[in-house]
Amino acid sequence: MPTVPARPVRFGALLRQADNRWESIAEAARICDDTGFHSIYFIDHLLAIPDPSGDILESWTTMTACAALTRRVRVGANVLCNSFRSPALLAKMAASLDVISGGRVELGIGAGWHEPEYHAYGFDFPRPGVRIEQLGEAVRLIKRLWTGEPVDFEGHHYRVRGGRCLPRPIQSPRPPLMIGGAGERKMLRLVAEEADVWNASAGNYAVLDRKIAALREHCRAIGRDFASIELSLQDLVVIAPTDAALEAPLDDARTRFSFFGNVDEIATIGTPERCLETIHRKVAQGITYFVCLFTDGGQPDTVRLFGEGVLPAFR
Image 1 (cartoon, rainbow, N blue to C red):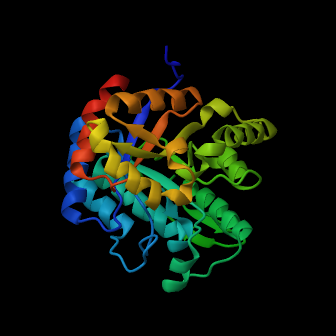
Image 2 (image 1 turned 180 degrees about the vertical axis):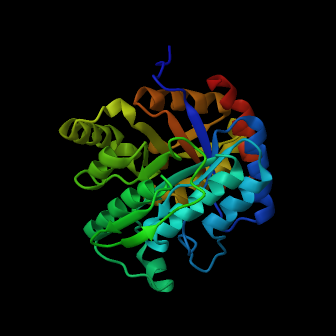
């Protein structure tokens, strides 16, 4: 029998903008809205990875357009790069979209990592510890601004005088905050201090149990209930209607996503029935929020297959 989690199991679809047509992204977003996905997510990169000569739509623009196309599904980024926007401006952007979307924004954010796009777009690229410090200040400032009250903030990296974020978000007490990252000393400490949801990347799945143990220890050290943080996984998904149809996309995934590690060991792979078996195993590890990184970028037929073949088992 599958383990029954303390939280409901939820699924987001990562509709990758790199080398993907807007028309396909829009259609996939509508399918997610119709088939019961909890959320749709977008990647926050300014250059396509691994080939920077490819096309990629900017995340917040794409997210906003999809929010206007949908009725129910929640919207976010997996995850925003803190370095690309000032935290006060980001607080304003998120509050505005929360109002416009009827309270459907989820703010996923991380410290940033892909150095080439920093240089390509003129951003400083400080060492990792500094980027994590910046992220911590940004999160605390955003939370204060979302109250709608005047804010004076004097941090080491950011300063605001008389800042106000009006209208404030319509979600109460505020939009949920997801932090992505898995550094065991500093990043998971920040997750313990500030996050509602922790998101582990697909590349961290091989050491997921160790990361969860580190997060649990940080929660213990600061006196936070570990169960108050939802555990989320950016789950690499290779799905097809039959075993025969799976061969080509799986071979492609083994090559294109090898930077995550052994795809056969970390990914959710197979027909909907086989994917369910893997997902139940990952739920038993504590994951209740899956951000599905479909290896074809989230094409409409793939998203529909998952939505109609997997999601009903969790309703």
